[in-house]
Image (cartoon, rainbow, N blue to C red):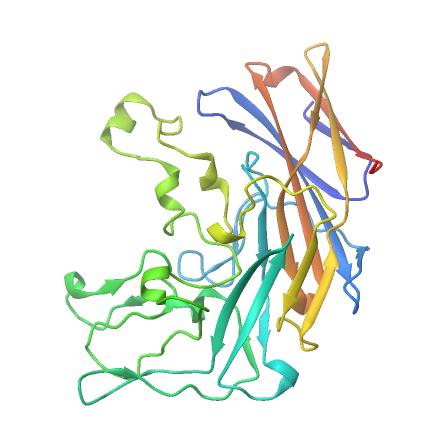
Length: 333
């Protein structure tokens, strides 16, 4: 019962959940791990990484940025395109400022990377120090704009940014030499545009948390444990909004990275993979398709990860589900 019959070279996992109406959902995630050659060509890795049941962080959960979100979630409206990596100064030469970019299917996102800076005393008040030359900067939200300034002893006077509570740059005026952010959008003030990065955003950070719905007294009395009526499926997306595709990617899309490897540029095409799922439940057979939910590029490890998810609504038939057979369908252009 509840078995997976995997006929692909990828790693699958499954779980049960409830939809907004309370019906059982059979969720299957399939994760494919690829090695990226120096020229960018993806080849299937010998070791396949298992889908995640829970998020993983760079450090202590809640006090560090999200590295990977859970894979076993309902299908997302589009595909999350994520990069976990390091910014490299062009040519490996120390620089005080340089751009990094992600381009997927012709849509480009560019960020500005700077050397270390801090607040220092100025004639009219605190001002940013000049950036130091740098060759490498880890692209985590710990070096993006945001943070939680607890320098004031009174908690009511402390300042934090709900868009990125682990970042840098928030300043309450208590002291100077507090570190400033090193990554920001190419255009706009990060105080208004929000933290800049290519990695996943945690579920309790804004603007993602606002899409998760309202868990108030009315919800507790009238709806719990079901999802709130104002829950939005886009809350399942963990990528920054400008890295969420309007529709799910299908594979075959070109992808380019700039200054995210020591060589400078890396480009490749997403593998074309089509998965089918056959579920045997209550003396019948249900055919359903997988949807590409996440694309994760890790240039430092020369690794590409693709995650597909599928959801089968089972109503009250969970006890009768026998198995799901996973097959890879040959690409037919």
